[in-house]
Length: 325
Image (cartoon, rainbow, N blue to C red; front, side, top):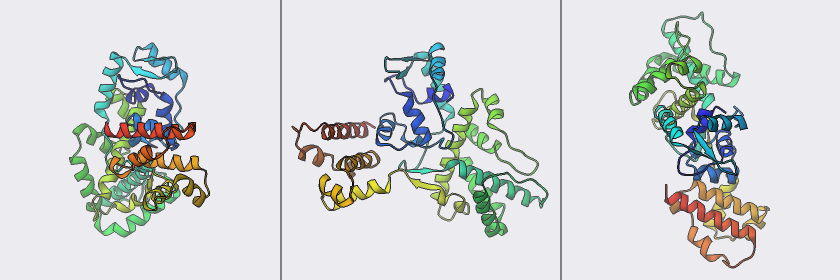
């Protein structure tokens, strides 16, 4: 994992564990990882680099320490120095914040592939050029684009150009420029992360993250405009971060007022799994939608069961994180 990416997710006020950054970007959804993602304010980044198998190596941290950008404690957690904070501010200015519902995630690389191919096909079609090499993407995604093109052929290029122009108009000029310069079209091959990185004087990994943020926000924009012709390119790529199993447990707990033991018996799972499901629900739901007070006051506060005590302790931490957001 590039040191600059690590800098983006660190701060000056607390020591943070780099392993969490790795897990969040790779999309690991254990309750422990989701909790620390919530604590660090990184849940919007969950799965952003899924499939890339991001790894933070000791030499990555060593590089940051050597350059006096971070300091570390005895556990290996890191915190920004003043110099590191300055570098992070520079990088953060380039990175657009992620919009939309944090409980859902997008297979953003697939959407990007689809849109790049769709824009290329549309561009060549507008020039009545049939002799070109289309971008090579996954077969299923290529089929989705082909079907989309056949359905919307009579409306092109306006059907693609109108929503794209509307989206780019609302961006900062520099971000709109980055988005546009990656596009592939008639006699235009599009620029790579490496080419853009040289001009922006950042690493290619930072450009990739900027691009994926832009495409995630573009997908959210398309989904919020119900008449948009581009929706078929993205609709099937959204997924819930909150697991179905956890939702079922939560519904039993809320709607049927079942105890943890009753839910475990009914669903044929362990009580510890029920508690994990409830913690996951607390992480994803707004504070008002989760019965913190009922759980924390109705359970035996003097129990010696360490598992239950940890459950209550973690729930209090989640509540504090949410009310302090």
